Amino acid sequence: MKICVVGGGLSGLVSALELAGMHQVDLYEQRPIPGGCLGSYRIGDYWIEEYYHHCFAGDTSLLGLFDKLQMTDRLEWLHGSTGYYVDGVIHPLTALTEILRYPHLTFLEKARLGLLTLRSRRLDVAALDEITAKDFILDNLGPGIYTSFFEPLLKSKFGERRDEVSAAWLISRIAIRSDRGAGGERLGYLRGGFQHFVARLEEEATGQGASIMLDSPVEEIRRAGDGWLVNSEAYDCVVSTLPPQVTADLAGLDIAPVPYQGAACMTLALDRDVTNGIYWLNMKDAAPYGAVVSHTNFAPLAWYGEHIVYLASYFAGKLPEGFEQSMLNDFCRRFSVSEKEVHWHRLAVDPYAGPVYTTGLRNRLPAYEERGLFLAGMFSPPNYPERSMNGSVVAGQEVARRVLARYPDA
Image (tube, rainbow, N blue to C red):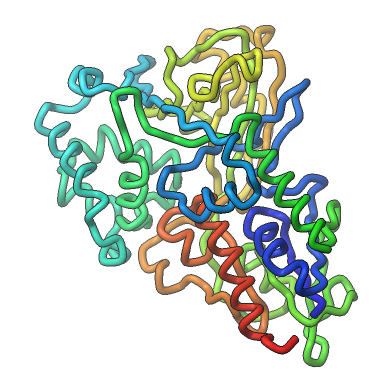
């Protein structure tokens, strides 16, 4: 068969790899680089992701793909420390003693929060799909914990839609981040960056005969007899990894939308650390970003020769005029950094950075095949109720399996 894959993110690259060799595969990617949200900048002699990334010990499909691509020797298990920025003060929240000293929760509230973290892996997230995160926190932990701890986090992540987010997402988020020791979360990262993973996927797929076409946006998908036309090119089968509503517009089909939000992530480099050794610093104070992610408080500074920081922001609609400069200005003022100290900075913006996990979403996710088109991506069941690289790998593998099952004699 002649198969078109739309989108060169992780699900697209994985599905192309799975289908190549047996069929002719053309992958269309509108950007000049592959990887989607896993794309990277080249800075001097190193690569750094446009959006912060790490993986988890339970990411079995992702880790299996690393092994298949002979990349396991690059995988480093590191520790990520956490903190909370409140009223202009950085509060570390990694070690038990630091949590006990945190002044904005009572001892009883901290105990309740700790018990929920321990319980999170045993809770049935499917049963929490129709319950909002807000109601779950208020009912199980009380208003104090919601107001002083969770509400600012939900607001920075989901903005005006925070009250629609399901408890399934919240508990999944807590559970996946509960692999903690005295030094923080145990997280995986590839030495040299995930760019090497993307490059190996591209290399293997093209080695199997796939054609990966960068700078090639898809303008139209149309049914043509038993097949499809993509940008007027004929195909027997189309796999789209774009958000369902975008695919629906391109194809003129009725496919139920999935709520999405955008991300604006600034990456910058400095000579010094400004978050007191903390990797992931959540912001309770109002700022143009919801978290400061100090990458080189996680991955070794020696790999880069400069301190790398991400400023993470989510948005709906359009970014305000001058957002990049206001983000940089706020960071410099808040953390006492002169703009002259910033070696470089880049802003990555993606209007479809990830789903908003609203209540009832579990039953509204699109199937792998809709109206004759195959769909896979962040919106697929393996990425519910929280997106991850592992979920996107599983979605890419599963949609390829569905294509092969649908056309067994092709």
